[in-house]
Length: 380
Image (tube, rainbow, N blue to C red; front, top):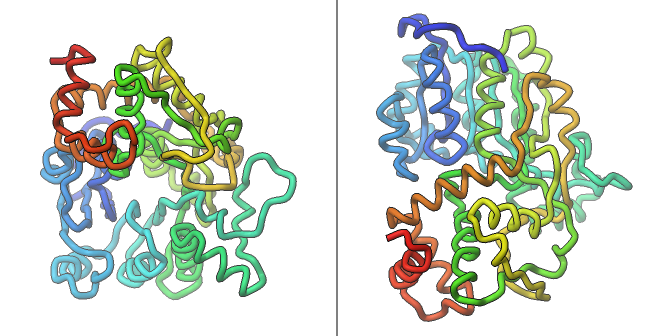
């Protein structure tokens, strides 16, 4: 990957990075990596939610502006920031969930982005586009909305998240042609797994895996997913890729701009293969008991189109290699095992949800379930 400049730079010389988000899973890991470079002046903009100790891992080491993306124009802190800072070298957007949020940010930053605006998008955009005929893996050029207005309305209603993410991409392309417009890079991500996942999906599966062993209830998978390959990406790989893009020479950056890139593990996996990898990392592979059901609780996948191709990203970012799935699973499972042992409040919150979602836990208190689990794992 592109090498960091040796030593820390003086504050006045540091390139400026504005981060929308920065307190969630991918954002906080990216900011932590950038801070380790010792050469950036980083400002984060978020509503101030504390997620997995982001108030101690990230916030004290950056300039933090508390603002809601829906009301940037009414935020005194954000408006003062825009008046104070003449320009930013890079803008990293981890929280642009709606096209309108990206539009408001683009307006505020018109003429202020020296390098590029990096937008974290999603493979959900393909859900609201024309079907890709014949291909096993979806490529970036498939992100084309249906020409028929009624079809477009129907698919947008079916997947509003994909519609809004694609709208965010469209806002970036539109602003580029206007006065003060800036360059951009788009990363389209499949379901993201990682430490401190605030969607709670991975932790839900990890807890379910652990509990099904001593509860002697099979872990269920929808029959429709039995053989279906899925794409995933590790949050740490996303952070490494973003940092690599920021640290790269300007000439290389210009070649990557105004394009969208899929990012994922090199090999897709079925949901069963993911769970088998987790069980191996947790040391309970020999006890894994899976059954397939017509209808049951499922946390992955979030899309219907299947896996995505990463050939374009691998060709463009020759310095970046996705981690092996097994490496990611070992790291993530270890992190959550420690969180379970510490009885972290996030673990209790997920268990409270599971007692409503999994039949064999119905009616149980989350704290009781946690203590039973700790007893079974001999983690006390």
